[in-house]
Length: 162
Image (cartoon, rainbow, N blue to C red):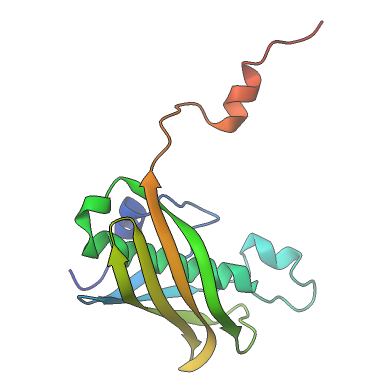
């Protein structure tokens, strides 16, 4: 498999709208991956970041990089399927220019190290071949929680005071 559409991505990642930040994987190699994120004005964060000058928050660019990295980890380490990946550290993050609606982020991630449940992945995000962000991400993999009720539902079962 050299590419993935959003349905295939959704089968791998646990994220859903509005937090799925990967629209397509265009290349998957032995130790690297390239993904795309189409930035649209309809994304909810643009209503407040910033009114009159919509800019994609840097933390969401990093999140998109981490999601692309998660797909790479799943491909390189099949034993991690069914686990959930959490960011452990973000090193040397640099933001070169704002990302705005209409841009297409090209996210390139390369595995630096994968050992048991820890992965270190170097990434760069570009728009029109110009760097917009880069970072070295370290991620840990853990088992998914076994509780069955979402937090919002747990509140409903609390005793009511009269």
